[in-house]
Length: 191
Image 1 (tube, one colour):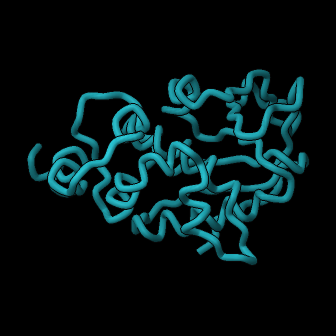
Image 2: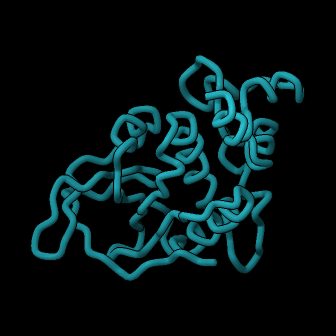
């Protein structure tokens, strides 16, 4: 399943750095206007929590690869409602309509932005998913937790804020991970 949408138009005052996120300020004459781009993932999280659409700056010619990369992620997670990616008239900016599933919890939003950065290394022709998945340093330094998350343990129960702050540069055994990341159904049963 590939959720790659039709082209839309975006205007920006300046060219954003690769890996930057932008929320549209307005929509005029069939064009989204983005005036502020966020290169810091942590600052972006506050903007992303209710985003119906946002824009992402990536290396040229990577928009389709990013979409396919997330198809693979969302296949692993068995998501019904998928994130939609699509091109803009700018070769290094794509739009993202995130699945509400990613927006529900702050820790998921944090991981989503790390995965967005990792997705830029994915090449469809090489099918290098595993290498791309851990190509971002934050992803590599939290590899065990990401693998545990992708195995269906998607609800965070800890107190720290931010994926990297909780899971980066630390080794966790399965017991600790099973306390910090639980399947969503367990959360429903506990409520």
